[in-house]
Length: 81
Image 1 (cartoon, one colour):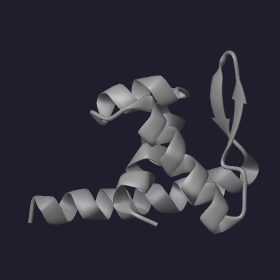
Image 2 (tube, one colour):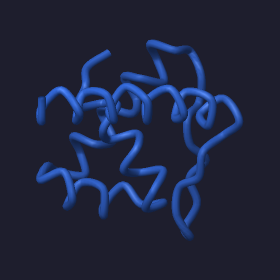
Image 3 (cartoon, one colour):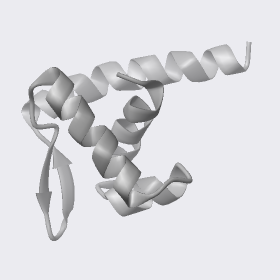
């Protein structure tokens, strides 16, 4: 697990879009998709349900998202320390 993967998870959940998350994180949609796939493999869960209307957290994804928010917020705080 890498911080960039957690930031991607948080951004996707906020925007319900991998493409918008990629733009906000200044990376490609392919990277975002790869990072989420890697997290799903590492945690052995599906994080998002995907549809033509967007992507949405699964119940397991929501639990991991809440922890990812804490980690990314603390990381951001360290940057300003």
